[in-house]
Image (tube, rainbow, N blue to C red; front, side, top):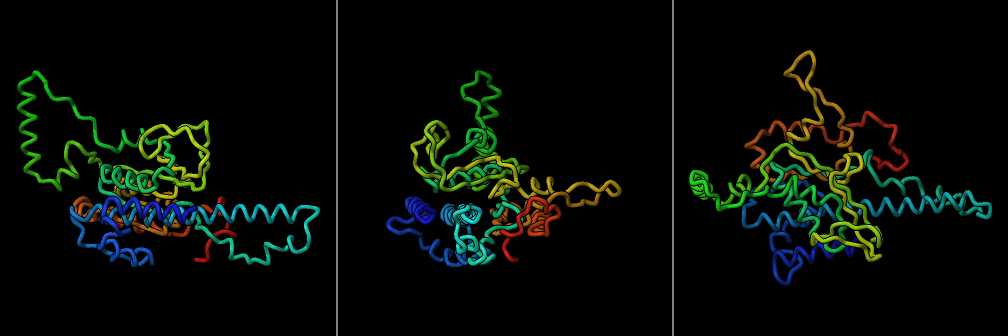
Length: 326
C-alpha cells in the first residue's frame, strides 16, 4: 500500500544519509514544516547538504502524489460499486441511497485538473538528478516508461573519446580542462562538460499506484534493466506525459513561460497568457536552486507563479462533484 511505499522511500533515503536513522538531523528539523505543508524558505542549502534536502523534498512530493492518487482510485472503485448496486434489481433500499447517506463531500478528492505538483529547475541536468532520485526512492516498485528518452534528452551529454591524433584538438582539450578546474566544483555541477545545462525544457510525469506488473509487458525498472513483470503491485511512472494527464510538472521557468504566454499582435513587447488551466490545481510548488534562477531571470519565475491556481477557463472536462471545496 501507499504507507508501505512511503516507509520504503524513507529507508532508501536513510541509506544515503545518516546511518541508523530514518532521517538525518537536518531532515528531522525540516520534515515537520514540510509535512504540514507550510511555506518554507530554505537559505542554508550548500553542496554538502543538498542531497539530503533533495531526498526529503522528493519523498514529500512522492508521498503527496501517491496518497492523492490512491484516494482517487479508492473512491472510483467505491462509487462504481455503489452505482452498480443501486442499479441492480436485487439492490435493497439502503444500498440505493448509500451514495447520499455517505455525504457528497466524501467524494471531493481532487482539483480542477490532474497536475498537483510543480517543480522549477534552472537546467535539464538538475531536473535529471531530481527525477532519478524520485525513481530511486520508489525502489523496485517503479515501472518507468520513456526512461531511455529521458536519459538521452536530460542526462549527461555524450562525451567524445580522447586520444585524437590532432595536436590542436589535444591542446584545446587540455586547456579546457584547466579552465573548468579553475571554475570550481559548484560551477561544474551546473555547467560542466558532463552535465546538461540547457535551460529551456518542460516535462510531464504521471504516477499510477497499485498497478499489477503484467508478465507480458516490458518496462525499465529502477536498476535500468528490462522488467518482464512478476504480478506484484507497483507504481507505473510515465515520463513525457501530456500535461493534463500528468501529476507532476517539471520545468524551467522560461520553458513553462513559453507555453503559457504568447506575444500580443498589437504590441510585441506585451505578452498575454494562453492555456494555463493545467496549473489551476497546484498543491505543491517547489522552486529548486533559486540562487541560479535569480541569475537567469527572476521575472520568468514571477510570471509562472502568477499563473498558478487561477480559475480555469475550460470546464467541459471537469467533474465538479469530485472537486474539493476551495
